[in-house]
Length: 308
Length: 291
Figure 1: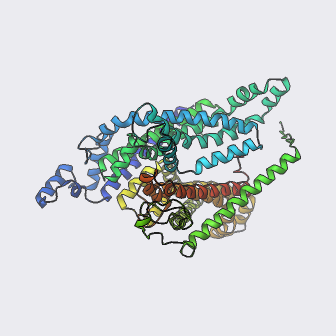
Figure 2: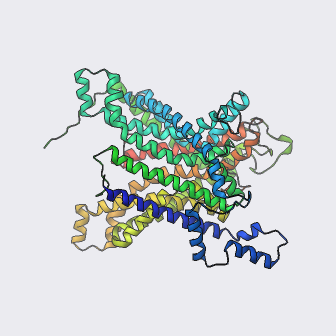
């Protein structure tokens, strides 16, 4: 892997983050006057002018953006309007909840997707395969929030096995994990199936068969090893999209992660908090994508992004 | 030099017939279903047994009966009628926003391919950029900023979806441009506009139809998610997402007010996805990855 490629991708990611910061900054300014949200009803024009000056809102837009950017780079997005605390601090506090949920969901997703995907490929064009395909497609077509609510209905209300919502690293984790896990499982399953189909048709698999290698060994060692790259790629990409699912899942289950806090901030028009959470999730998303690209090149020497 | 000949896969005839039967089922059933959904959304006024916003406080959360086949919600409104009217919003947003996205994307993609140079590169940079943005968060932030309305939801979704079309159409246009007949057309002096209209666009259509269909499915899901989160088309317009959000606090007392709109979303999106997959196999063989 060449240094040039790494530098190029890094620059690209930095540029994207910069653009994201412009969008985030512009959105907050477009949303109307933040002062009117903060100032008490009976504030006089002088009071409002003072608040404006203290927030730096009387300066030219470009200067305001520069201040926003330099502060943001230091992790300072200002105080949350509602909670009167540092927005970044609040997010960092909530971060472990999202990470734990993401890890358990990803694990469940893989545990579901890999066996079914492999089995589907091995039993190509049989009812097992068709069933697997439809389940995967149905999973991709299902609204996550609805699935979550149905799980609550069946496994928390009708049969009270699990709590309906709330936070805890115990039974509280089960239903959100199933919701978010099936959200990621569908895509991984589809990619696993098609990667395994390709691998099962290669010459080395035919050679292995003719040598009399047991079928399970052909599937799990020879084919799976060579199908690994696309599977790993989609898994890593799903790790990035899991943030999208997390926003919805956390809302449904009142799981106090960064997705929930972002939604609450949007409802409360708490713009410092909205800015901080959009930026944080954007940067995370980009970081995972960048990592996938680099990882991909490391894994497969045939791939080189240098000359496209 | 080695030549690889694919070995023919030996398939039992019964298996092949079964595959054909499956394939037929997986095309005709979703197509029929979508037609029904489309017609019932368009003619919701005529079909719906009740006014979707008519409250009946004597009949709150009534379970499915002959009078209310999907039951009533927490305000006594008929769930079946609301599902029919909700289809209007989902299909309208799904189709119109993707049409917008396709228009912008194809124009920019072809422009980037035909103009080339710095401008072409710049267009592609912006495209790549919008592909990496976390879509739902941006959608939420925009929706919270500009306020929820039908037009805004359509604009937000088009804004998030045009980039895929731009990238795809640029790639296609670049490869079509190099084909012999297009080069020949250049050589005999056809105007760039004629080449675009006669040679490039017709060859792009298949790919765009396939991508467009799959994007409609994604757009319907995104619309319902935005609605559910309260930043979609505002009430009292019935949408599937809002119905689920409104039924959620009472789900234990009335499963029907959450279940039926969810089934409607899932069935519609699944049908569009199945058709999209079929179209991809049919129209765009190089796309087909046996998925």
